[in-house]
Amino acid sequence: MDSFHKKKQGQIGEDLAAEYLLKNGYTIKSKNWRYHPYEIDLIAQKQGVYIFVEVKLRENNDLIALWETVSKGQQQRVVSAAHEYLLMNDLDCESRFDIIGIKITLGKIAVEHYKDAFYA
Image (cartoon, rainbow, N blue to C red; front, side):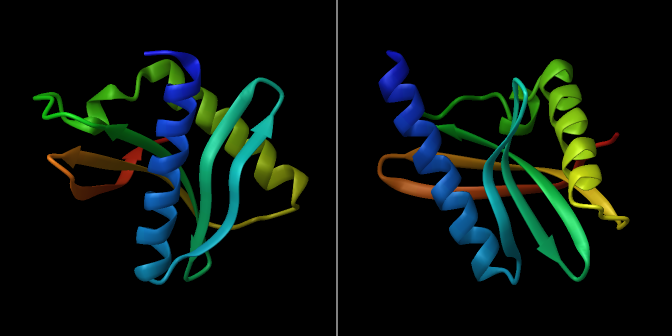
C-alpha cells in the first residue's frame, strides 16, 4: 500500500471516529495533534474528562482485534504526547486513553470503541 493511500485511509478512519464521538456526546478538541515526532489522532472531552484517542481502520475482515494492533511503543508515544498536551494547555483534569477501531467490510462500517484501552 503506498503512503498516499495509507494517509487517505487514516484520514477516513479519523473522520469516522470523530463523527462517532460527536454523536455520542463528546466534544472534539483537536485532530492530529502533534508534539515533536508524536501525534495523537483525536483529542476529545466528555464530562470534564480528556480522552486521547488512537484510531485504527481496517478494510478487510482481519481476525486480529483492532485494539491489539496498537503496539506498546505507540501507546508510549500517545502517553508522552498527551502529557505534553495537558502541560501546554495548563490542564489539571482526569484523562484516559481510548482506541477506536473502524472496520469496513463489504461496504459496511462497524465502530469498536475501547475505553481505557491502555494506561499512562
